[in-house]
Image (cartoon, rainbow, N blue to C red; front, side, top):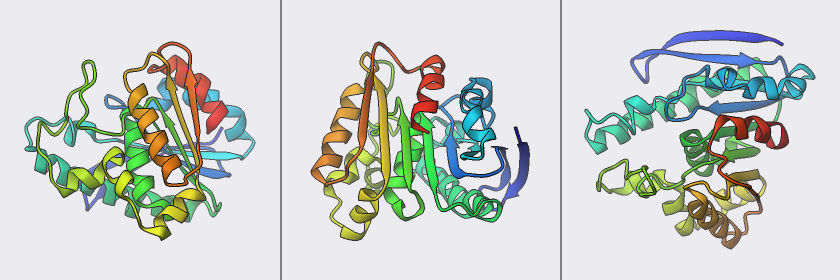
Length: 242
């Protein structure tokens, strides 16, 4: 299997950023890690191995990026507004640096966004706001409202709320989305939500699914038995949906 390590200084973030590429051809998968994960997380968790047949056959190519959770949503040294601004800088890096690399390296016409846990939020938020860049969206064990308090998961903005928070969270902005051009882009997208029946974000996933159906956006919602918010479940989910 082709494996490449890349590192460069991002002018948008003012720091070096790293990523791993797995595969040589096929649909391009932009892979966002979990809250604690790094760019090598999907390799460490065995998700890359679970996708090895598809990667080696040239069906998919993975681009595993840093998520910068500890510099954005989970950086308590920053104010909530500063966390949001830092996250927008991260998104600029993804859209204008990582995706430019993807376009140069691979001309395949399908780009998908994939993520687990917080990575699912990052994939969903980006793809729902910029649907013209993506043909597929795979969301595993995600929360799509970072202000939602569930179990040990708190409001990551600590009560702070403005238009930036509204437009970042799919559970907030999608119900009010009326732009037909964006909706048509979303209706052409292959969207998969997978969640465990005992997972903390099941209700939030059901809410997102209802909103998508109300907007005429078809998708799959797959509910797995038990608690699926863990690497062992993601290893089994990935070959089915990615």
